[in-house]
Image (tube, rainbow, N blue to C red):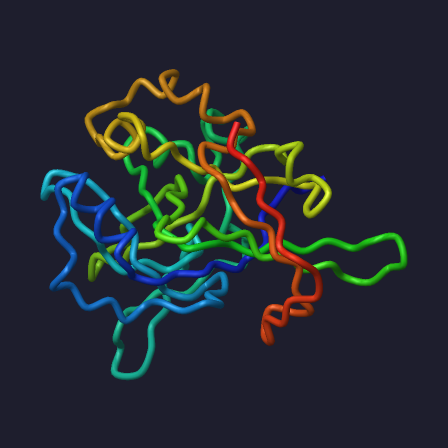
Length: 237
């Protein structure tokens, strides 16, 4: 069975995002982010945090790790999402040498700062159940991901790592959970350190874990976002 997180993110710059970036040494208060919204789909562009030889910064990236080169009008080279689904990278593929995320896991890890993410699954009567998972007020969620750089043009793409479904959210989505990184210790610094190639350090992160409280809000459909039941606070581990 293919394990995936549904392709829906809630991306919004607010005080919680600014403060977390400042803790990491990046000031975003003068930064203009045009890639945000409550309903960001796979293949769209958002901004990710990366750290490489040029330092810590935020760059726009396509939410689809594998891109294909294409030639448009006037022979301009561009990139488009590959036919191979790659908006998520499964935890059990990270150490498979020929998998899409193998090299990135060792050299190009990123963080995606979101206010929430969406999941869906079929229920007993065959209908779809949609749930938005949100950070608490004045908080954000740091998702662990992988990125790649495509030439020419230094085009960035990324995927979000998924783990098995956490038992606390399995009733909402049984297939997988996104990798949520702890913001209260050195996890983010280690994850973003491109010089750290010993990925065994990250093995504990690949088991389902909630490093913070999240709020589950059942909704009618992602495009409308009408609550159909009271929200539920899911406590951190």
